[in-house]
Amino acid sequence: MTLTIDVGAAGKVIAVLAFLGVGIAILSLVYSRIRGFFASRGFEPGDRETMRRRWSEIEQMLSAPGEMSRKVAVLEADKLLDFALKALAMPGMTLGERLKFAQYKYPELRDVWWAHKVRNQLAHEATYHLDAGVARKALKSFEKALIRIGAI
Image (cartoon, rainbow, N blue to C red; front, top):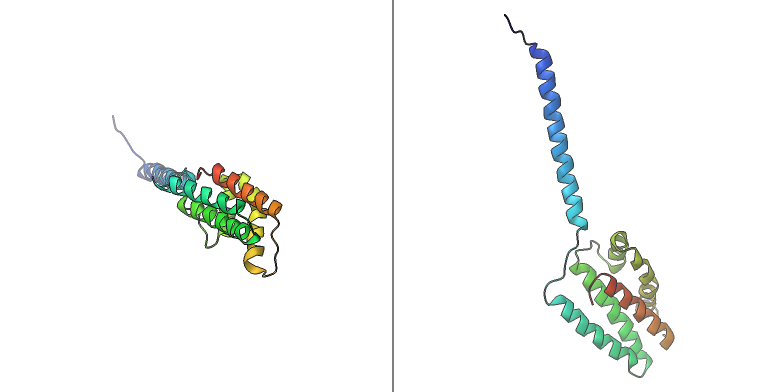
């Protein structure tokens, strides 16, 4: 009784199995990286309390008399949202870029664009008048976004 093994065919089988193994390993690595990237990143232990305190200060600014306090409240709310998105490791050089990316995970953040545009008008237009109602609506939008991402 003789056993003959076709070395060429065996080599092909081994090559195919090795190729499949490497392919599965690569897919597994890519999947874990993507999943890790979109996984919930939390805030540092003191960050949430700090942001809640800061939000309370912003709300007090809104209720203070004068247009300037309303303007500062909107600017500070925008900065707080930026801080929160940075803490969640959202990529981007500006808040606008971070918001675009964050919308993939939090689609509701589309609603805060209007408030961010109000902030941009405040920052770039010297004669922009901020009505009390617009300021309240903008802060409400920032608050909803901060609550949605778990910052406050």
